[in-house]
Image 1 (cartoon, rainbow, N blue to C red):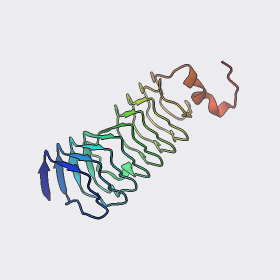
Image 2: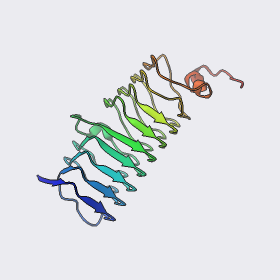
Image 3: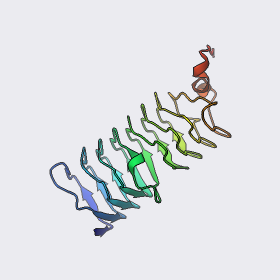
Length: 189
């Protein structure tokens, strides 16, 4: 498996050109199209993906360690198929609709200004995560560890406190209705 260090890849359409399977460390991928490609078994360490399309990419046993995604379109990704060892990333201004983080252990993950419609967080560990200015419309939280997670600037979420661990999680006053949805009560401001 090829190892690539400190390289920048720009304006490459990987639906037409194949990225060599290997280990990429301290690399940057800018304005690249990975849509529906196969990244299974690839390893990315301390890399950054910026202004790229990674929608429907096969992530089977792909390894992401300290990887940043900025301004990326990432529809339908199965993060639960990634290699769990050292799995860590952050997301800023990304579209992550229909992704799955089922049973992922990602405490402290940052989701900044991102759209997470219908994302599955079931049985995951997102304690101390940050959902700053992120839209969690129809996201699924069930048996999820959300202890000390910051939802104070998040919106659109519906979280059942009886089915999730939310001790010391942070919510804004306007976001409280997302904790009470299941009761069908009316909250007036």
